[in-house]
Length: 177
Image 1 (cartoon, helix red, strand yellow):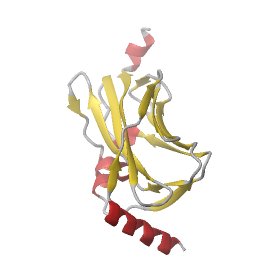
Image 2 (tube, rainbow, N blue to C red; image 1 turned 135 degrees about the vertical axis):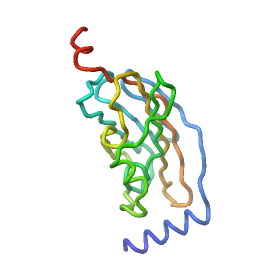
Image 3 (tube, rainbow, N blue to C red; image 1 turned 60 degrees about the vertical axis):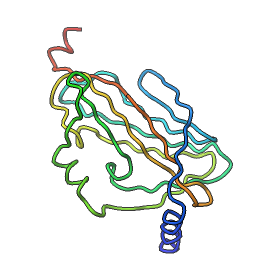
Image 4 (spheres, helix red, strand yellow; image 1 turned 90 degrees about the horizontal axis):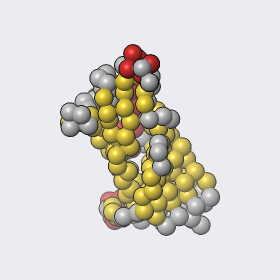
């Protein structure tokens, strides 16, 4: 059954390609949400300010409030989502850590088709520091793109969340506040 589902999915991707859509974007202090046709994708950080030693966990929640099931393809975080990490003070992209480079260059990590039933959600938590070199204090921004497969498995619906901002401070800078 799993092989058949994956084969059908691969054929659907080859035959129909991707469908780019615009969705509504709402913003809260530590999170941003994209939504369209009953599907929402929320990205949030646990806080707005981190010390250099703290992990920076990005939580991505895909919520299906539609009346039909949807599907996501789970893979390594750099294959599943296209991340852009920006050091805002230097106005340049942040380079990958060795682990991030290893994941980026990995041909095949895992590829699992995950069904998100109607009125359910799926949550993934990603430690961004394990992927990107954020060893300098400063202001940063995370943006990413991803996709899900509609119920008929005929086309991917792409979403994009931009500019989730946060700062990294040295321990002595944080204690001054």
